[in-house]
Image 1 (cartoon, rainbow, N blue to C red):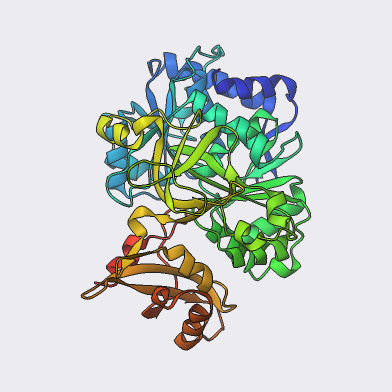
Image 2: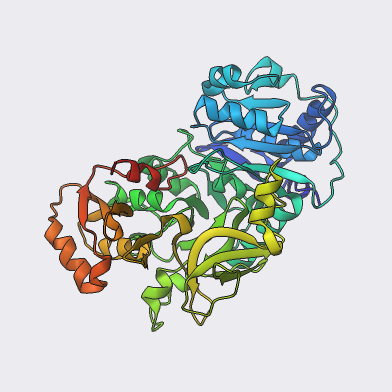
Amino acid sequence: MNLASLLTRSAISRKSDPAIRIGADLWADYGAFGDRVARLAAGLRHMLGLNAGDRVAIAMKNCPEFLEIMFAAWHAGLSIAPMNAKLHPREFAYILENSGARVCFVTDDLETAITDAATGVAVICTGSQSYDDLFTDTAAPVANVAPDDLAWLFYTSGTTGRPKGAMLTHRNLMAMTLSYFADVDSVVAGDCIIHAAPMSHGSGLYILPHIAKGACNVIPGSGGFNPEEIFAMLPDNPGATFFFAPTMVTRLINAPGMADADTSNLKTIVYGGGPMYAEDSLRAMEALGPKLVQIYGQGESPMTITCLSRADHMNRDHPRYMDRLASVGAAHSVVEVKTIDEHDRDVAPGEIGEIIVRGDAVMAGYWRNDAASAETLRGGWLHTGDMGAFDEDGFLTLKDRSKDVIISGGTNIYPREVEEVLMRHENVLEASVVGRPHEDWGEEIVAFVVVRPGAKLRESELDALCLDNIARFKRPREYRFVDELPKNNYGKILKTELRALLD
C-alpha cells in the first residue's frame, strides 16, 4: 500500500474537516489538501521529469508545505529525504550528494544555504512562482508502489561520523503507523497533533497516524518550540498531542507560565529520543496529569522498539513502579526485541546486553552502504548499539549506548544509573555522566550538572546522595557545574562534546 493512500482516504471521508492549521488559522481542509497533493504529484512527474524511485530532498522549517511535498512525493511514486533545518551547510551538501536527490524544496530562510550547498540539484523555494507553477490543472492518480519500495531516507544525526541514510520503506512506515494505534495512543477525527518539534524527525513521522484518522496537523506560528506559545495554543486545540524530546518536556513543566496554564485540551505527550529520568517523569505527571507515553526507537526502527504506556506511567500501585518508570517499556506489537552478549547469545532477564530488534518496522538497510547494512542487520536483526536489560515482565531498561559505558577497574559502569541518582536532587535540572581516562583505573567518572535557576548546590550534597544510593565505585570523582548541556538539533545530549571538555 502506498502511504499516500492514507491521505486520499481521509480526503474523501473527512473532506470538510481541518487538515492543516497555522496557529489558529485554517490552511487547508482535507478536501483541499488532497487536491493540492494530487496536482503537485503531477507536477513532480511531468514538469520536473522525476521518475519512480527518485529522491526529493526537503530542507524546511516546520510549515504546511512540508506535509504536501511529503505526500505528493509518495503520491507520485517518489521518496523523500528530509533534512533538519538547523544542519550546517556542509551537512546539507553531504546529504544532497549522498542521497542523489534531483530536487530540494526549501523555505526562504534556507534558500541561500541550500543553493550554495547543492550541486546538480534543482532548488525550489516554497512560496515562489516556481513552486506555484508545479500545481498542474490535472490531478495525478496514486502511483503503484511495492511495499518494500523506499519512502523516507532518514539520515542519522551523525554524532559519531558521517550520517547514514536509513532506508525506510512503505512497509516500514505503515507498520509504524499501525503500531501507533496498537501501542501508543488512539486518534479520532477532531484531535490534533501540534508540531513544535522538527517535522524532519519524530514529529514528522507521527503525521502519518494523524492523517490516517483525519486529525488536524497544527503548526505553531513560530514554527518551533516555545512554552508560552504552546500554553496559548492549547485552549483552541482539543485532543492535542505532541512529540517531544525529554528535554522539551522538562522545559515545558519548568516554564514560568506552567502554573497558570490551561492544559485540559492536552491529550498526550509522546516523548522519546533520549532518556527521561524517573524523577522528571514524576514531576511532569504532577504538573500535567496522566498524559505521558514514552517510546524508544531509532531512525533504523522508527519510533517502534518499545513503549511505556499511559497506564504504565500511572500504575503507582505496582510493587516495582519506580523501576518501570525508569524503563522504556515493553516491545511494540510489530517487532521482536531481545538482548544479547558479545557473542550474539541471548542473555537472561536482569542481565545487561545489546538490544536487537527485528520486524516489519526495521529499515531495509543503509543507503549506498552495504558494509554498514550487513554489520548492523546481521542475522536478520537490527543491532542497535544500545545496552539494556529486560525484567521478568518484559520491561526494558536502557543502560547506555555501548560506546558510552564507563569501564573503571575492569567493571562496567552505566552512566544512566548514576544520572538517575543525581536527578533525584530537587535542585538538579539536568545531569550527564561521562568517563575520563585514569592511569590506574582505566576510566573515572565525571558528572556535568545543571542547577535549577535560583538554587544552590554543593558537591558534597551530590556525593552524599550517590553514596546513599549506589556503590562507592560508581560515585563521580568530579562534578562540573555548567549553565547548559550541549545538545544536537533533536535535543539529545552530546556526550562527545562533554568528553571534549575534559581534554
